[in-house]
Image (cartoon, rainbow, N blue to C red; front, side):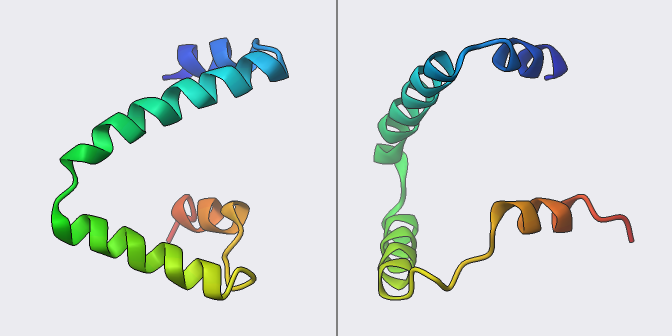
Length: 70
């Protein structure tokens, strides 16, 4: 994984954006395999976010919580 990160870090901003688009499109292709319950949950979360766009937790805060040692 570190090798992959190094490769990504060596890309230009435009190349990173293109990579992100490619990865996102591959995820969209996988979306067909979602169950009805998963799709309903995603729709629910999107709707909640659209109704309260400022009610978020920044990624930095989420990430810090994930790697916080007990």
